[in-house]
Image (tube, rainbow, N blue to C red; front, side, top):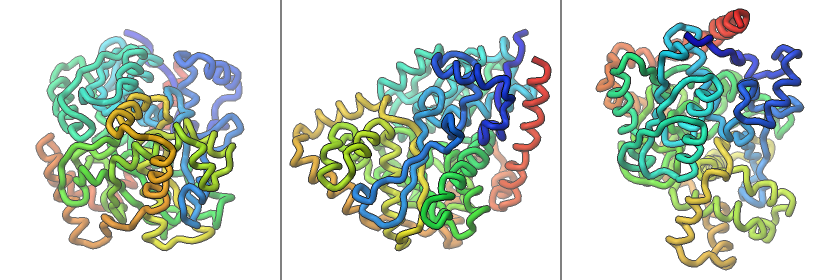
Length: 453
């Protein structure tokens, strides 16, 4: 039997200063070789100076007076913050004895970034893995998963058909040698984002505006990233938590189904780990706006400069975002207008990954629209960024809307064997706080595991 590998605690991912100083040189060296297992200790929102990687978007881009702060995920090992919940879920399974390296193969249902994270973490921790994905995602995602050594098991459809990957996972895990890292239902995903992402967001705004968070907006795939909102709201009770979803697949808004182009979100379900209790609003974003917006920022920074963005800032933005990030940015702009936020108010959102996995998405756009000359891009910029409206926003603080979301969750998860009693328990903040408190337990378990290395 292989030795269980070591890695960081939740506290060390939040605050790398807590990592044993004798490891620092090895961690720094690991950044030059992405397959060095010491990269596990680089799973953090912090840079080498212990500052949260973030950017405050220029008002010339957003068209609003409120500060829109984007946490930047591309600097995580493997290029996406999804590597964090992948590691958290895997290490919890290891320390609990449910996952045994050398014996178990890991299943990772995903539409891309979580699958990349699973394949990457399994490479570093020396476990075999299978990533279950829809068969119409971007080529770059498949290539990276295979590069890290995982096998692919493709199900029919696109981002909107991720429920099929979950069904396939449940079938595969009937094999006793398989263990599932089902991001949509396993609470390490929630714990990572509430503790690491939530507290990093709180830290990021300390010297911006009034130092508080008025709104946190994120588009749920697994809804893990939305869990940061629970920690934000615990610190800033006035903060509004907003779930964004594609207009073309409005499942949370009205049970709608459909195909869309925003890879990483809008998965035709209310995920098990989505804390509906703390979701204040749902806002819809049109999918084509996100792809066109990404093209402008990446391919045409000169257009941003024409509208007042400083040239160095426009260049810096080029590679920071993917399609779902543009969705998050447009959602943040929408909510700044809807909530009538002004100077000093802060809205936080997240860039889950960078541009490096979206060349094929932009190629597809170029073939679809035919004309992408500057006069077209100027019109797109004005329509997409500066004319964001406040349509298609639902106030889910209303009891009837909350109950509708709970019913959606029941519909999605009773069929996977969860009891109504368990699902009803999720209607209380006590449930979520109890799960969050387990961070302390797993910190100690991980440290104890490392002591045996």
